[in-house]
Length: 173
Length: 170
Image (cartoon, rainbow over all chains, first blue to last red; front, side):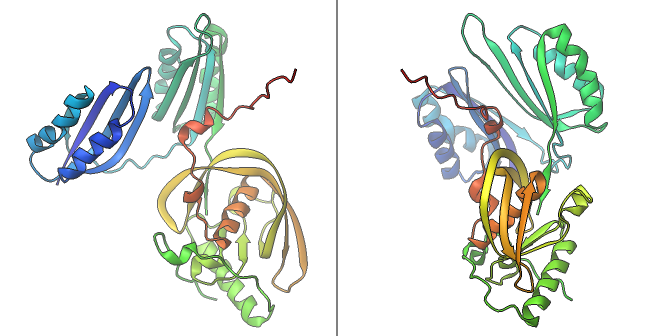
């Protein structure tokens, strides 16, 4: 069993996920962690797959779907890595009038204290003349929540954005 | 006292609805003691429901002191519990002894009122909020054969949790 990371993008339309996953299933591939979502006018798929046959067989299995739906596909063989153990314990929510540098500014601060981003979702929306940017980041903060609050605080004024930092409580029952 | 074995998904027995408790006898109290010990022995250790140990009775135990200290009701033994009021909604991440190694986002009421009986059959009434309310609702779902997997919401739900404004009436 070998692993690969499969990336698929194409103009959004119904049937992309079905076509791609059916082709993989028929080629004896199994899907692991996956993120599939629409970004802009495009549908994007990133997923870890386990494949049993050779690498070329996976690519050729996808070929009919790629041609029919005009997709772009990228397949990277990857070594199997053990699942990371750190869980998201902090959620950072950011929003404000859209301007370049919001993501760079926030994540630079987070990286400086070893915050590990596990999940980042953002969306540009609102009135096209005055767009707003909304971003939700989840990750693990080795230095704790208060440290994240204090390093992000100066950005509120310098970038003109709202930032809130919440604990991600997992209720284990 | 004994630690009882926990059923784990996809065991179909977890999907069955539990029956009300009718007899409050020593056997019931012994079972509740075992169920409590089983809860404390678990990885989260803050809540358990009788169907998780293959006993189809409406019994839930919650004790969130490991998380909240004394800012809660402590050990709650809820026999035949009923939610009689609830308000507010919050997204929170949950895990379950019956669904090992998986956690996911679930929407629960923020504040609840619960009517129940204790191990002696006496009427009890609790008001819970936040973490404790979430634990009670999670465990009560087991009595109806539901797992938190049945209530999973997308990660994106956080983003769109804002109030829905009603269009102005003309």
